[in-house]
Length: 249
Image (tube, rainbow, N blue to C red):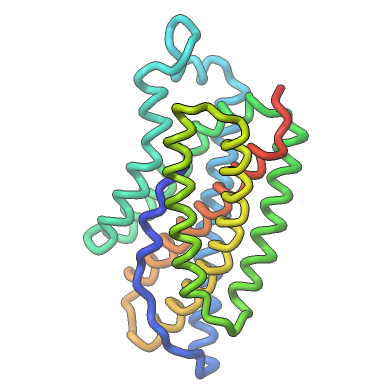
């Protein structure tokens, strides 16, 4: 489960009032989704590269072939560190450094996904990815177009996310298939809802940019953090679907 500390980015409660503001909002959203899709492409490339190249994969596996070596464990846990660094260092890091960290995070995350690609059949991976994309797209449109304030709904989902993390830790020791199924089922609901909530939050951020006159570097950093938020929503939704419906090799 990936960290989600970046959900605490502040946003304004302004309303969309002018065509100029709408243009700024559209440009901001275009950049957010370009960064997100770029990150997904990087992750997909590295996941495929390592899952199909045993020589590369051997650098992450222990010499006896059982479990991970030190580098392998670093790769597995490094994504959490990247997210925390970008979230807590948002004010201090420059836009180019934020971009570099986001791309590095995407690459390392993709390498860790190589083990998932090897565990599940190609057909189930493609099916779950397509399902996640469809659900993400529908909820993103709903989040952008709905007039209802989802702030309260987002708080409930955030508490659900915390509950999932706790349940994962508990089930690490219990190793219950039933609990694992329930966690995955709730996870699909939580990350589906968070997609709509986060898109609406980003919409408000885009309006605030116009009114507050945020500098270009700040806008770039906000778009990268927005992309990171949606990337996490999509990836976690995909992983939850894969846990539910994926067929192992």
